[in-house]
Image (cartoon, rainbow, N blue to C red; front, side, top):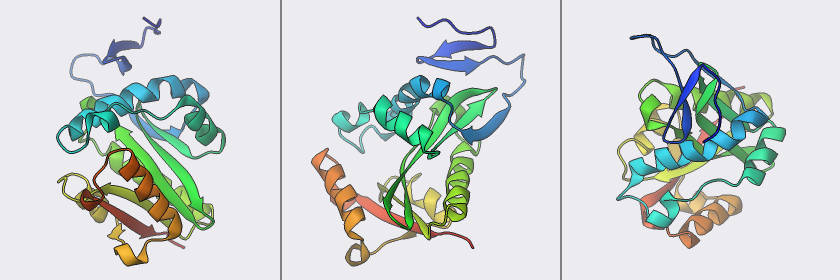
Length: 195
């Protein structure tokens, strides 16, 4: 077991911020640090368990490779949700088209869910995309999972009609299909950047 500093204890392999009594952790959104990267796969796996019954087990046990996360972190395209300076969520962006930022992955550990961290991560990604000169942010999600499509719609994302999918988004959906996700249950969405 990895040695942790005195501010944390572990749960499900992820450091958990210690709290005193009913004190809630202090949450923040920040660009990821190299030291955050080893903690992200366990967050990804814990969040995936919420999709049992919606995605095949092979997808639920996938994690982003450390090489992919390291590259994204070095490029400034990886954000973390921190609880008392310990990662409990993250958002990973890929630039799949010159003017489009694609939200490749977003996860919040279920023990820190329903606290607005997912919203804050998406807002950070969208703010960065606008400043970086991207025209829009895209993503793919489940069409029929109640907390997916409606969540993104509330944040200003709109469904992209299949005939309006860019070649790059078609490749993303083809990759998802190859990995075992049912394309009939998936949807692509886009939010136009401010400014």
